[in-house]
Image (cartoon, rainbow, N blue to C red; front, top):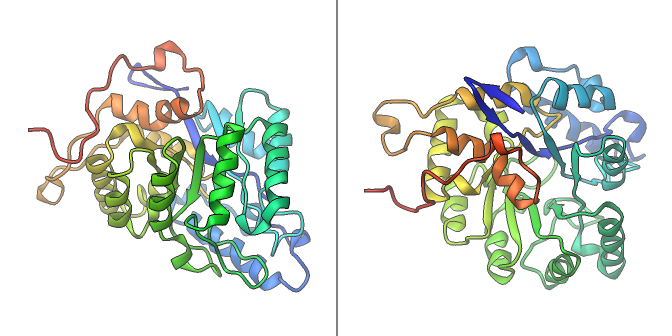
Amino acid sequence: MYVKDGVKYFVVDGHTHFWDASPANWVPGQEEYAKGWIECFHAYQSLGPAQTHWPIEKFQKYSEEQMMTDLFDEGHVDVAIFQPTDLRQWYTTGFNTTETNGELAERHPGKFVVNTNWDPRDGDDGLKALEERARRWGCKGVKLYTAEWKGDSRGWSLKSPEAARYLEKCQELGIKNVHVHKGPTIWPLDKDAFDVSDVDHAATNFPELNFVVEHVGLPRIEDFCFMATQEPNVYAGLSVVVGGLMHARPRFFAKVMGELLFWLGEDRLVFGADYAIWEPRWQVEGFVDWQMPDGEEFSDYGKLSVTAKKKILGLNAAKLYDLKVPPECDVDAPEVEPVGVPAS
């Protein structure tokens, strides 16, 4: 819980990882990609405040103790949601797996939500494995990585019949939250594989599922907003938006937040720190202190209320995942209705 000026915020980090990208985990023959991938990730960390930058050796593999301190002791996080990314083409035991995350979560009851993942290219074996992981870890969400390489394939689409089979399996298993990485690419993946158009297709066909577009499709923010405003089951995952822009690109951050609030409203925005790229403390404190700037450049956008900040930092994610919120952190009623046009 974070408290500022007497206001109590229940903080849910909707996007966190526990990864191993150390050289010992690089697949022989794929070292160039494994090294390049984590170095590109590391470069993104430079968009945060200088005092939060890590040396590359620490960034490649950090300890459980470091993570618990950064998230819960110092980072103001109440509950963190693991978002796995396998990348087994480059990392021998996987980059950030359900199993590793789940074992850590078991050692810290109540601190984490364990999501799993799937890849439609895995066919029937993948469906069986998804079911086993979902039942083992009680998963209510999945993280999908449509640009992941597998053999000669350099990505897949949510529009495919194979992906539809997996979405049907999610519904059967009670997995209702589908997080999809759609945003800045990381070398050597292909940027076009992160286009948001396939989310549009799947969200229409599966209205019972919630689709959280992680990183809001950046740099295609307009594509995302126009798609999301017509799909009521699409949410904006703010990892990268806050961590990558609030400090390094404050005017662009204001514009992105203004567009998201204008088109989606405050009830469909979900905070994520994207640990360990960025630590949550400066993001939570900075977001609570943040306000839409004055001036002609930002005159199209409204100001952000305390109620909206409480929803975005935790209450919206808590609703998606049925998390119990302390009464003193909750809000009585929405101040602003989600709209596509400004209130008159």
